[in-house]
Image (cartoon, rainbow, N blue to C red; front, top):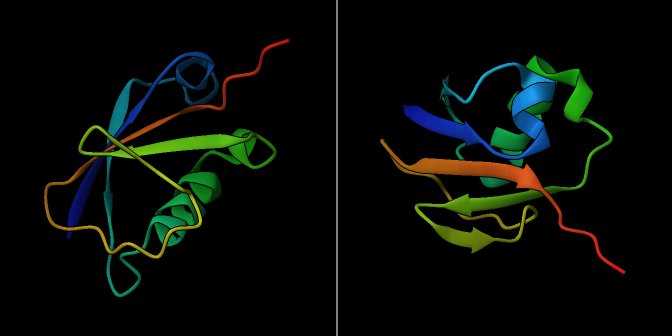
Length: 81
């Protein structure tokens, strides 16, 4: 199953691309996808990641199962002061 992942803000520079496609096999969860992303892009391992699936914010620990052709946005958690 193919999932399109789009990167935003500083993550684009860290991964050196705007978007890419991941093949998910048995683990179709958000956490499974994050694991694949951070394996491919180790620079993201220590980052606080925000996720949106089809333009809806999702808790990165959510066990929601992704579906074919979902679009996942990955961006850094906002900080402020």
